[in-house]
Image (cartoon, rainbow, N blue to C red; front, side):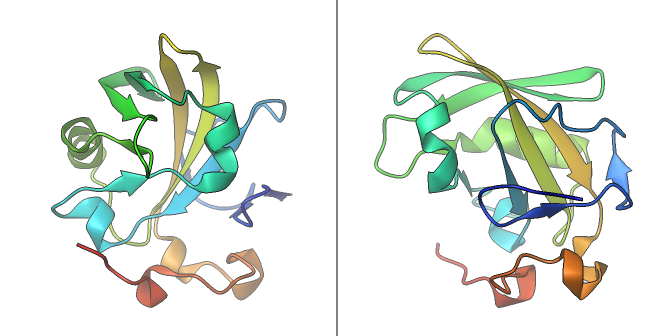
Length: 147
C-alpha cells in the first residue's frame, strides 16, 4: 500500500484497471469520481498539492491508459486549473467510468509545451475497506456538488 501526499491511498490488492504500478519516482494525484466528474459538466479540477509539478499555462494534455491515448487540453493558467471538459468526457465514456471509481494520475512529462499523464483506474472504490479510504473521510457520497 502506498499513500500519496494528497491523502489518497493506493492498494496493490485493489481491482486496478491496467495493472501497472506507479513508478514511485514521479508525482501523482488521485481522484475518487463523483457525479460531476461523470455527468455534465464533466468537470475535473486538479488538486492543489500537485500544481507545483504541473504547467501554470494552458498546454496540450495526453491521458494514457493501457495502450490508448486521449488528447485534450490542460488549463493551468486559470484560477482553478482543470482538464478541459470535452477531452475528459471522451476519456470517461471510452473507459466506462462510474461514480465511485478512482483515477490515479501519474505525471510522465510536464512542461510549458505539453503535459502527459498516465492514468490508472481503480473500479468501484465505494466498497473499499475503511482502512483504504482517504483519512479525511471524503467519499463520493459526502462530496458537495458545485455546478
